[in-house]
Image 1 (cartoon, one colour):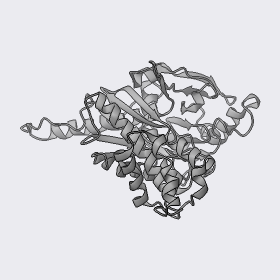
Image 2: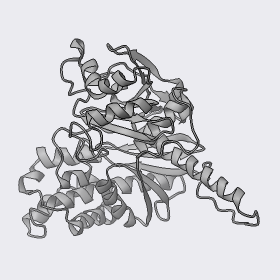
Image 3: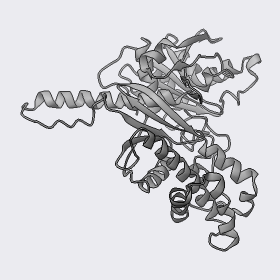
Image 4: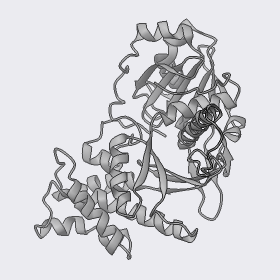
Length: 394
């Protein structure tokens, strides 16, 4: 989930997944979102059915929903769990919560509140222990922990997901976005059922793109990119690639960054060059190719402005090559795969371009996955009454 970034990342960093909020909107530092000023939000609160928080490391985003799951208002701030207005010991979480949601709760104090993300980590307001994969939305709802805020509201905190094994893996926040995407499938299935009942039943087409029993791949590009295999409404397993964080570290803290200049706009040609190098010449691994971002500059083959995008392509290319190797072990491949991407649109577009180099030309961007996911888990937990075709966010 969002780990929103304190300064806003450059286009090149964002495209590489290096911004600390690569899955959030680049403008998340705004104190109050458009259409969500205090007066409008207070008026909307009279119709409120749920307040939901996407609370990450360095940002907090709050959503106000009506009874049909529509988002009435949104607020965002930089008060993530590591950037509270004051220390946690001195009421930092309460202060951030009050700042984001106090006006809404003042107008509708009985509104239930749910939160997902790093707020449930060991460094958060209250730790919500991980649930084990495979995990469905019911497991998340069952794992919710509760903390009472100073204002009297009860915060229902969603747990993350743990994949046990020799190399354990965790996610905290992404699981809610994934279930938001899967909830979209359920909406589509409901719509398809309604259409089928209205039509004459003589169609023999056996293909159903809304079949929720199918195995699917969902990618969440970002600081720590996640690739999750989902089936029958469950997160079966997932993989984490530290692509964005490694980009940031290499760009800012190694010799590679010494010759780089951030371009005015992303250079797709340089980016694709990096992707293809990783795909075609990356057998020895990233450590054997990453120095080329400097040597190509020293030999005049890449300008200073092209080097950041080349490095971005190289790292994303190695990520996808690694994912391809994992899929091959499962007798699958990226080629011909129909998958979904969740996150910042510019970053997901960059991944879509890179995926095409691996034969995957069907990568769909899922919008409002966070909003949908928070509503869905709240429904599963009984905090709100689920409504047909709910959570159409915005």
